Image (cartoon, rainbow, N blue to C red; front, top):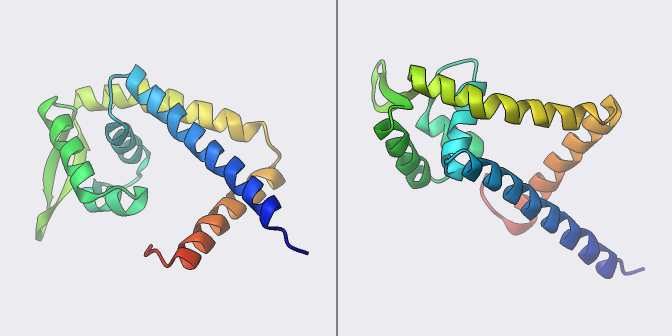
Length: 150
């Protein structure tokens, strides 16, 4: 039995959900006068238990170096972050919040994480585990089938 039409429906629905999620985060960023990249930088730095570099953000959040570099320069000019050289590495720099940056992250990232946590709290533990596993599997398989690097 050919399931192509059924798969096409699933693909369209998931792609639309993905786009809707992008729009939700984009609107949230705009509401706080941030670019999408700036919001994700704040999110990544605030959520990291260790000091984080530009490369960490690019690799972990799937942004181009140019996009993150441009956003970091803007945040640095606004005195939201500062870039401190990584000891023993002339090229890498840690992304560090200034006091204003920490306050901005607390105003933007904390409510965002709280909303995300409320979403997951609405699901059972089993649903959460399955959702995360399936989302990861979807990404892995699509990468494999399209031969896209990770």
